Image (cartoon, rainbow, N blue to C red; front, top):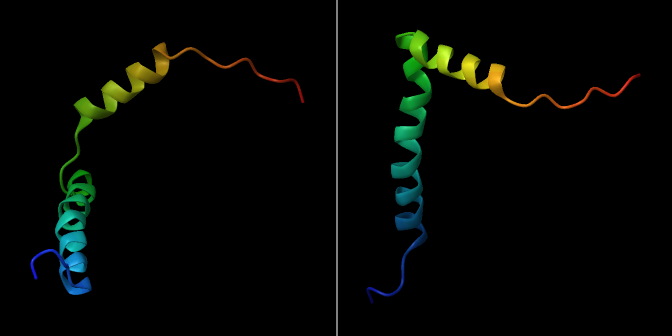
Length: 55
């Protein structure tokens, strides 16, 4: 019946979800995005710093 999913169908669903993620990870290598890097640097610069423990 339609209520039972075969394992093959489940795996196909997982692949469909993973494919866009893999493509997204390859994008920065193809074209650098300095604007995004600048965003991250600004966020790190303004983030509250954790107190350092003396060694």
